[in-house]
Length: 199
Image (cartoon, rainbow, N blue to C red; front, top):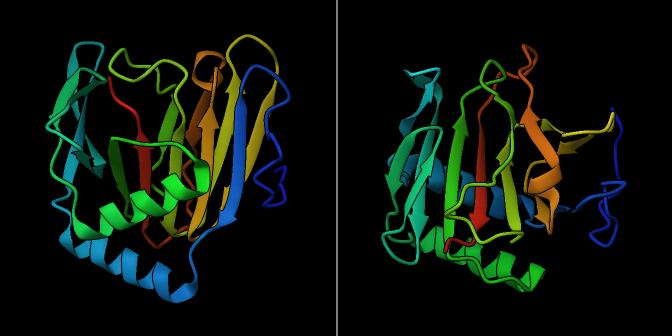
């Protein structure tokens, strides 16, 4: 696995997009506070997807928040945004200050352990602002995050540390797929928050 220094000015991708890894942006006490608050207070629900006409319920759980009751459709299912909690609003403000980008929504994922992952995909739904930034905050277990170019033989991996921020920008979703591979070695949960800009 190719590891990168946490210098947010470095582009992890060699072409066709921009990905910046900030490393941990929260201290240890903040990580514990936000992780425990989100784990307890978010109304987590199993994710659903329609694959080859079949409705699949995933072990991974999700929640969807926004400035208003945005609907978000992906993998054949639609979610209505909930109102920001104080913890989410605080994190949103912190990340907006770091990135200089205003976000109006957030998709949260709860992975209970390494047997739960995410297959190759792009966040390129029509309801997202084209070429807008997506800021991904990780809390809990460290997980590998992979990128694969859609046309070329290019692959990149980065280890997402506890409390770290990764930002995907520009044409990244157009040209690259990303995934979270499964791993039997990981036995603890990870909460992932992806702040987005909806139309």
